[in-house]
Image (cartoon, rainbow, N blue to C red):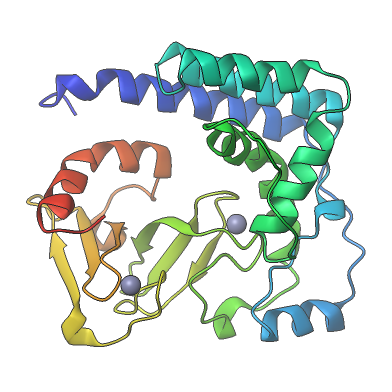
Length: 260
Ligand SMILES: [Zn+2]
Ligand SMILES: [Zn+2]
């Protein structure tokens, strides 16, 4: 990291976000999830996510605070435009505006169906993804005890339906994808693209960072890419916030090769 001083502010922002999320997550109770095992298995078999909106232990005053603090951090590091920030903070302040937006957005993006909330300011989704994480992560913690992910061969998160944002190559050489919303991990074939399911080995380009600690998988069908932390010879487990910053130079390399 010391050889990339220009990343200092991105690192600081990630640290601020992670610290805030940890604080919130520690006070969010583990939810009691009423879904029966048979229903969970049925959902899994159909490729549908397991966390229903009503399962998320959302205490609204706490969520409102988390939402506001997330927006504050993003604004402080210029990751949110001033006008978008103002619009987002207004939503948080208005008594009943936030709840329907959050529930609609979650339903629409978790595969439960329904339209996206209308007239949402740009940047809102980024705030929602980050603010909902500590609450959703608690659901995944509970559900992971109840389901077997070995048969889940999908590119989206088995718990919340979101896309992977990172991956880890385990000491046994398997690849686990890491959800960009709830941070849950699930096993996925190393040379299949999670975004378009392309599994033609010749059309997946994989290359390692110079130090061998990270790897990029680029898909030559949909031209998206995913980064992975190679834990095979590592001294610590994957830390997505840290690893996604440490691999910013790899993003540049991936984009140079035409991946987005
Ligand atoms: Zn998820
Ligand atoms: Zn693809």
